[in-house]
Image (cartoon, rainbow, N blue to C red; front, side, top):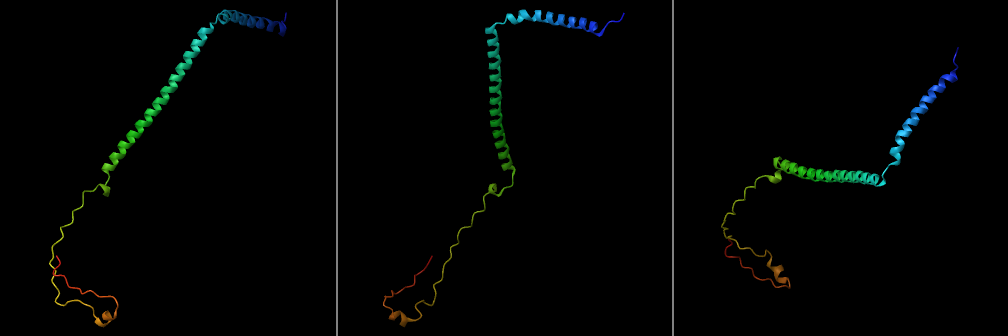
Length: 135
């Protein structure tokens, strides 16, 4: 006697439906006994933990940024000390003192070359006397 294809499928569907029904019966009591306050507390705890983690990440980011700036400034200062820049060279040698020189008095007195033109001018010409000595 041959079994038709429909008769073979029906027992398989029955077993699948039976397994689904048992799973539904087992999960049904847990779904009905949910405490709303406990769910809210768990949600708040999760959100608070996420916020603290976010704040910690931001704080660490700021700390790293400040530490990087300080480290960079340290290394820049170190590089400046090790460079051969002329700005940090030793002081230059000071100039020597100005020597004292005695100036000889000229034997020829200086005066206007053409006195006639000087006399024709309307402005008075003061008489210049040569200085005695310049030191």
